[in-house]
Amino acid sequence: MIRTSDEYRDSIKDGREVWINGEKVDDPTVHPQMKPIIDVRARIYDMQHDPKTQAAMTYEENGERHAIGMRLPHEAKDWKDKRDAVDLVMHDVGGIVTRVGDETIGEMWSLRDGKDILNEIDPRFAQNIERHIQTCTKEDPFHVSANTDPKGDRSKAPQDQDPDMLVHVVKEADAGIIIRGAKYETAAAYSNQALLKPTIANWGNSEMSDYALGCIVKMNAPGVKHICPTGAQVRHLLKNYVDDLYRFFCSRSVVDLA
Image (cartoon, rainbow, N blue to C red; front, side, top):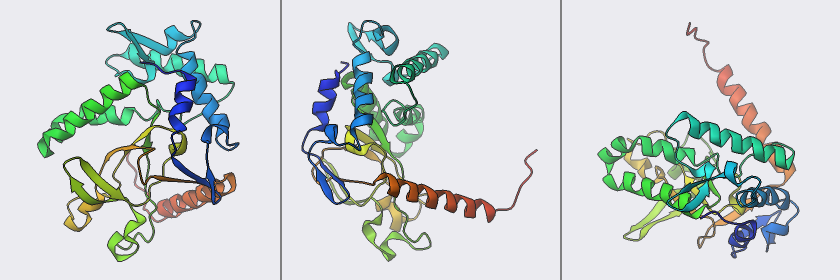
């Protein structure tokens, strides 16, 4: 069922380990670096209940209301409904915000579309993604996706440098997997869960198989530590990222695709 803003705020005041500039954050909802965007996400939850906006923000199925952003799209109207809801939110908050949850659920829809391919690998994969989509629809979590890994020296395998530079499996058990390593994730500190995506391209290399993993990570799971950069650090990271892209494209030949 759709949640309220108070329920969302309470869900991230769960003892998770959040650090900013070496300082542990006891309550992300009041920290000055996080409070503004948390308030926006909380407002989205309240708009799902507000009689003036509920019709645009939610849909009804089997007597229950669910967030329109989490709804599986089956026809063009479903996409228009999502667009209308986004426009409504942006108008309400008076600006443009990203990383508020609904923009990353589509990655799980893509996996669902490719379930036949997943079934060729292991039928449990398609079953798992279907279950995760249903859970998101019914429980209305703040769902995001883990984007990429710290790369380190890209000319070397992870095992040839710090093996924990990238997320990898260290143990498999009947209850699931135990993972270790770093991952870049926008909004992780104030979200509920993330779809962790693999970023190792050469899956055919058995030595890299421990690093080729994808899973759902609960943001308050034991051992998960959120290390958040300041604004200045973000600008530095973005500059390095843009510089890397520039060098990459400058090293490539121009191909006329016309």
